[in-house]
Length: 292
Ligand code: MG
Picture 1 (tube, rainbow, N blue to C red):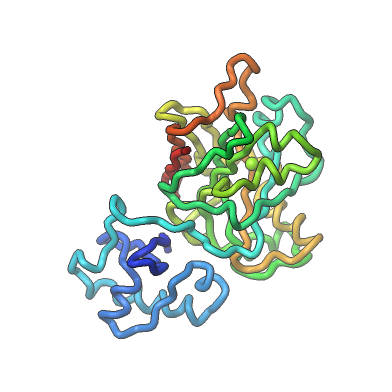
Picture 2 (cartoon, rainbow, N blue to C red):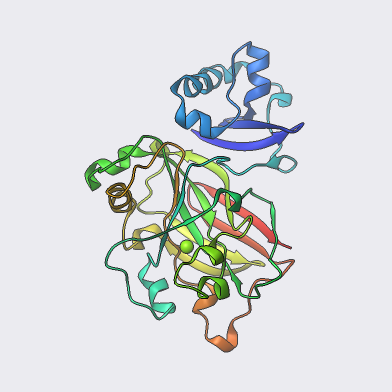
């Protein structure tokens, strides 16, 4: 199943991919006299609401009028997840990225976090804070937890993943490097755009996905998730030895090479208002954000 999250008349709505396009779950439910969830987060946490979505999808064939479908060009997207309990991230997780930053590969997953206030949607503008002039991009595959994971083995770990989306781990490098803790550089408002689509785990093999990023139309990052140093199963197992991962928690799994930080210092041109980033992952889509 592929889902989007969007706003309509100030309300949160879910769209479900069908052969006719993304079905507006709320409009479909009204027509079918069925209950409807409004947040993908709730679908992950509550089996009753997950079943409600399944019931709507099962009868989508009866809804042929375009009025029931979302116009992706016109709709206002919301972050794929609105209220994750945790936003975790893995640093230095592609060897080529480790090399370009002239650092050493971590011996175990390097875990940090972002705040939920950093979430942003597909097509949302990301403000560059006044006090930084070294803002960088990082396209990443994002795993979404669907089942509580505590002290799980790598072999069990992927059973706890509900699905995947695309994230851009936007980073203010001067603030990241200004102290041993990265949070000030990683978590300014809207520095964690997510989307545009949430793809359930049954539809995607996360181990071999092309991953790329364009800045103003120019390809800057271009790799494949097969190059992750610590794969998703290893990451989840490792984190879960320390604390429980809960449904709706999300994990940014690391960025490949090609970030601005990796350029020679005299060639580093940091992000500025008006820049457009397109973050693409095979099988999911393209997350677009402009800076302001
Ligand atoms: Mg990152």
